[in-house]
Image (cartoon, rainbow, N blue to C red; front, side, top):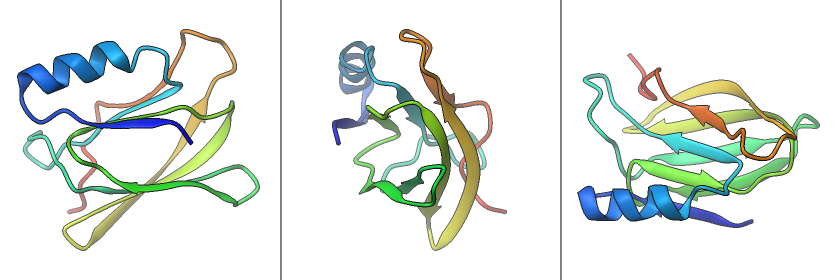
Length: 106
């Protein structure tokens, strides 16, 4: 599975955003105060319940090349987990994104 992770510092974040243009799923990990998080465990399961991806992020950005499908996404940080459903669309140039909601647990 092809993926990029990192984004610590402005130069690295700018490089990854440019390099990650063609990836079908782009995740940004943030905490309760919208601060960027690194070391987030990321697990993706396809619509049949099969694990398709597992890694720990090196920074707040994680870009993954996935086939179109509905995915259950589980993020873990600081011993807490958060789960949400994501859809990776079939249309090229329309990546799924996970932004706007912090990936932290209260």
